Length: 315
Image (cartoon, rainbow, N blue to C red; front, side, top):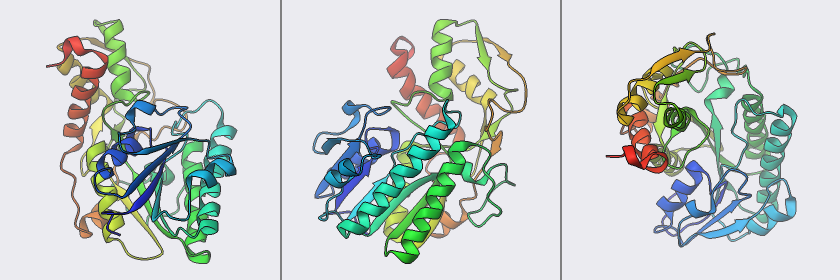
């Protein structure tokens, strides 16, 4: 699907990836509409020129108000994204309820194109690099199990109810305005105490990090080039970065040399997958490669987040 002149809805469009996609599309598309309850998103991230709806996707009436029959495609990004969320049942039930409401309304409104943002967490602790056809899928977090349930539901809607679904499984996405993940956490900790930094686990947790601008570019590429009723693609880089390496990058960019203190264990929290790297061979065969390595993505995001959180240290 070519998005030039398209009419699009982005759920969760005030969040990290959704707001960047909205900014990327606002000059190309005929309509960019964002729906977000602002529980984690920021209204200021929604670009000028995009239509904003303050709505709750667990409410079918709010979904119907935003998901109108004149749309060409829905990007369903809204979710509780915390792998260590405090209330497991709420995370699972509300994430799957939002997805069910969106799919149900799409059939009702006659809108058939959907891009769904899934996650590497559906694979659990799988061999690396992990391809899209790896099985069995055994997530170890409630977030991962909710995403897998969403995928199963959307597969049914694709094969039995006429939706065309592009299912993209993310590596760790990093970029500006992000809060609550490892990079801004380290920046804020070092602002409070420049001499020491507490790192969850043993610091050897190792994952693939993709900058949000590469992520948006990959999403658009998949939508424009993939075939079939339900197509799944991993989005990530070919490289990984350890938590200690992230600490090194953040410390270097802040001009600090703190002592590291590790909480111990091979993971940061229950449900944390300590090592992750997705295979992107399928995405590469579709004609897309990331512009930045994992290290480069982390460093660029670090510089952007320092400019927001610790401008006195920004270059």
